[in-house]
Image (cartoon, rainbow, N blue to C red; front, side, top):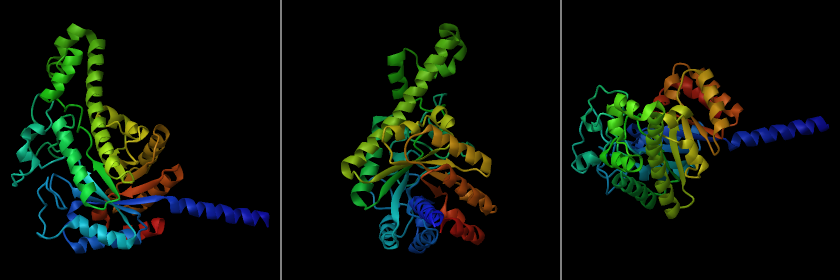
Length: 373
């Protein structure tokens, strides 16, 4: 009899753990253009037992909401996707987090036509590479870059992005703000005149000159001296990205302390910190984020499991693991296995990328309902 009681207690406890698991769904801006698509996303989320939606309301400097700062996306004039999604999600018992691509603005494929777009207003705010080229001079062939990106270290950019977040928090009853692209594309960027001057004032070396004349500086400073300067230059830019996140966190806490701030981050900790200059482990440790979503988009279940273990071992704070459902629509069993492994490792939840990728794949949806529903 005692054995039966303990089994029942164990199963109840296990059930409560499963219920405590948080489940999110990214919804890319293409699905926010009309009410029917938004309703479809909400219904799918409800069917899958999703708790919260991450709605991409600002992807490239165009707003899927009413904004005084950004031109509106191509929508019916009187349609406010974010307001509609919030109202419908409340009825469905879902949280809504406003997902913003913080630094990506505009496109390499086309130039925004609206003169109010930040790319047209302030081309000097955009990143500069290690050859001294503004990122706006890049062409479509540079596929490793997602889009033109703002320089996060510039005070003007920081003020602009704080205003972006403030407008959303003050005008919409969102449950959270979800940051994306809070990083450099690679460590070969960040060479703005302001950054170089500030760094040279402290270290006596212009990092652009260091990048352009490595042999000269090797001869002058020696290998160890150059390594020390390069590490300091990485740290300078890394700290600027962290400072931007800190400012946004303080902005939100001052307006609505209970609002959740999160970020989509690189899943490889070493690559994130050293190559993207995105020290999200520190963001969690310092309490700047309420949760982070490491993006583990891989078709290799062994790699995903390994990365989950490494992340959970190396970071403190709440983590919801981002899984690339889009890459597994033809191998849905792999996605189910990834979800189960994330659970087994003890992560706080999962977020699927994305509604847009999975909505038209019945077999994938059926399996997801079994593992999530």
